[in-house]
Length: 348
Image (cartoon, rainbow, N blue to C red; front, side, top):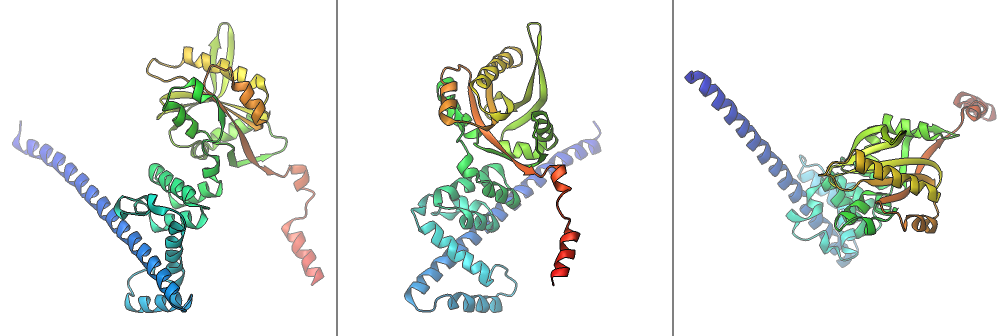
C-alpha cells in the first residue's frame, strides 16, 4: 500500500476521533457553565429572601441591586430586575415544600441540567414540586426545546400522563405494564387540527397523518408511524386498522382506533380482534404483545373499566379533544373585521 494513502486514511480516522472529543469537551463545558449559573441564581434568590426577612427593604432591594450589579458587570446578562425576581421565586418555590429531591448538589440535580429559560417556565407555571419535577425529568429525557416545553405545560401533560383506563396490569408483565400505562394520556389534545363540524372519523385520521410530527409529539416519546388504514387479511375478509405504530421502548406494535363517538363496549371487542390479528400476522417473535389504544370523544369510566375486565389483550381507552372551528355557513354570516371597524367608526 502507498505510504501517502495509508497516511491519509489514518489521518482521516484520527481527525474524526479528535473532532468527536472536542465536541464532547465543549458539551461538558456548556453543561458545567449552565450548572454554575443555576447555582448562582439559587444563591442569589436565597440571599435576597434572607435579607428581605431581616430588613424592611422590601422590593426596593431588588430594584437597587439590579442597578448596582448591572453598573459593575456591564458584560453580564441576567441581572435585570425582572430576572432577579425570578431568582427569588426560584428559591421560594423549591423551599416551599420538601425540595431536596430537586435541589441539592447542583451538578447532579435536574434543575442544573436544563437552561435557565426552561427552569423559569417550570417553576413559574407548576402548581407544586411534584409537577415541576415531572417537567424537569421529561425535558431532560426528551430534549424538549423551550417552545415544546411551554406547549406541554399549557396542555397540562402532568395531569394527563398515565391517566387512561387500561387493563395493562392484568395483561402485561411488570415493569412493562407500568411503562405502557405511562405512555398513555387522557385526554389526548389534537388542537393542531383544523376541523369544522360535523367531524368525520376519516377526516380526523387523515389530518393526524398529515400533521404526523405534531401527532407523534402528542403521543409521546417512542412512537414510530407504520401506516394508515393498515391492511390485514383474516380468512377471506379484508380489514383495515385506522393507525398502526411501533413503540421502540416497549418493543411492540400499537394499534390506534379512532371513534368519533362516546365509548361503547363493542369497540373493545373489535379492537381485541385487531390485536389478535396483528399478533398473528405482523408481530415477530422478538416483539412484545401488541397494545391497543382506543380514542373516543367521550366515555363513562365505570362502563369502560367493566368492558375491559375480561378482555385478554392489552388495551387502553382515552378521550381526545379537538379545537372546534366554526362551520363555513356560520362564518359567512358573521361580520368581517373591516365591517366591525366601520361600525366602530360610526359609533365614535
